[in-house]
Length: 564
Image (cartoon, rainbow, N blue to C red):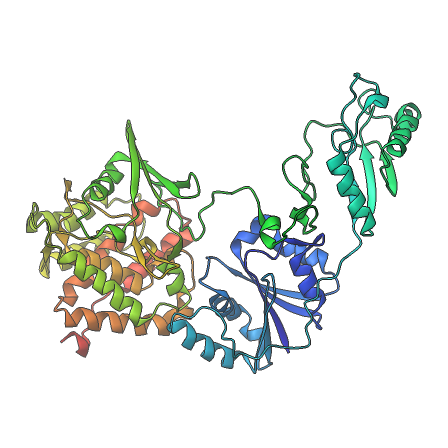
């Protein structure tokens, strides 16, 4: 039997002074444990903490998830892929790290994968209640005897009311009361003080001779109980310690110990300073930066010539389409730079779902529906571009970008000429009043309430600020993702996805044919769009750029029966 812990965001939260995952691991009857966790936990050195706090386990296997999933079942499905060769045909038990941990058993990994895929395709992201709950794992959280260290001055007692005279300190009753409750619960109390360390230049012997008697008298006077009293704490202006709290800012509940409150629940221990990170964020191109400025908004910064089209798009979103996009809150233009402040969207870029083979034909149908709505927008039918502008947006733009510095490949000239010739030979644009302009998986977010949000709209065509464009531009960007461009760009192994990609490619092209799209034109548009991204990824390492080039060379028209 293989035991697999599926972590949410809380495995390092404290229960009775220990990390929650320590208590879970303690109850597992195995010396080999598999752990699936989110990449965000690496910021806290998650693997090292587990390995060193749980030395009774001889072997850990870790699987890191690089995005925030929609539920524990999806986390288990994605994470177990790295364990399949180790698990074999053994039965498997999953345990989550929720406040009340649950355990689920399957006969083998194939049984689980079949069951999970069926549920995920039905938009169910948690285990079913009918899955057998294993009975031999207690998940008991016993109280442990802890060693708890208190500072003295300005923690248990005030600073002296007469400068330098420690006999004049006063008690801080709130913290003394906490100390007594901890002591009565059986915890070991240590008092560690820096008194007189500055006066005696760190000479602990002189410190003890000078201040020990007064200090002990003070502790007795205020009835402060302790097991150890240690002098010689280094004098410093700031102490930084992963096991410390400031009693004026935090409380002991951070470590899973609850006192002096009528109702105790997990949120007391979970309260932390908000770190305004962007979960599920994908790497920027070299021109733009994105930062989260508060809990509800982000700021995107980039050159005016790059972002002016996106700003125009936000300012001209047709009525009825606002829900497809983040809300533009504000913008500033300073010199050659633009700041766009917009709503922060919680969700998963479709790249992550595609990478884990979780995108289904239903999702493709929904994306086609979105494009149909955009391309058939009738509110503002003003067309300000023509076919020459469309061709310039493909051909002229590529010619302007093409140079030996950005395209240092032996056959670059041949590939470039093939794309230009292919676009011009099969040129068959369909100009729409509204297109998105950058409709690929990395710019499409599936929110946790199962709606879509679209990012990075283009808003410019042949240097004309407009929402107009060729619908093939949108389908070409979508096709590049279907073919696996996002995977290549992020260093994922395409070989493990070949069968899935072929299946999705066939479905996509069948839908394109059903819409009457010209597949040869679409293929060259797609190849040209990917070709044109090289200047935007010049900051990527050479292996990625070489893989992108190899990917470009694979984009070819195939004369399949479903094209007809």
